[in-house]
Amino acid sequence: MYIGMLKTAYKQGLQKLRWYCQMCEKQCRDENGFKCHCLSESHQRQMEVFGQNPNRMVSGYSEEFESSFLEHMKRSHRFSRVAATVVYNEYIADRHHIHVNSTEWATLTEFVKYLGRTGKCKVEETPKGWFFTYYHQDKTEKGREAKLVGGKGIWYFQGK
Image 1 (cartoon, rainbow, N blue to C red):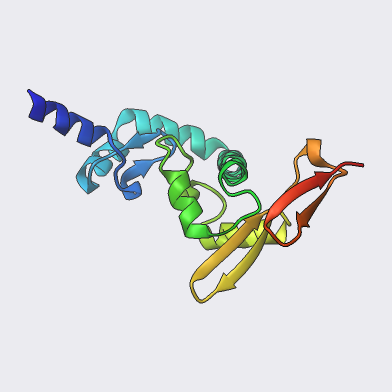
Image 2: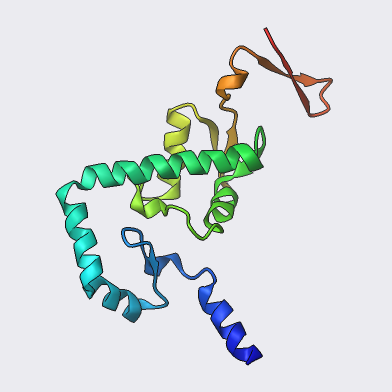
């Protein structure tokens, strides 16, 4: 009985993103399962809905991905310079995340460049990969200045 419970827990864990259908929010275990899912009636209905207005669906996923990704950055790595792949791996650990390949950005690199262009993060390309720093201010922090105290890495906000 204990072995059966372990197998069930293993099946419910995170699996390869390659076999995930964002439209149906369905995770498949392998290529055959994904192929069978794509032929299913429920998937075909979802694809008909997507086909009626694909731009709206992709932009909706893009907005949701961007806001949840930046929220994760804000909570976990505020004012820290961190590798984009590290943050993305933390982000995808959440079972119900939006996948980057369901958005207008085909790759994580494109998304990181977008964050740099729009000024939401400071972006740097290094030999070790892409790094970014989240520094976007909240609405409650507008009008405040962040200052570094004596070079000790301690931030404080001076309100106006």
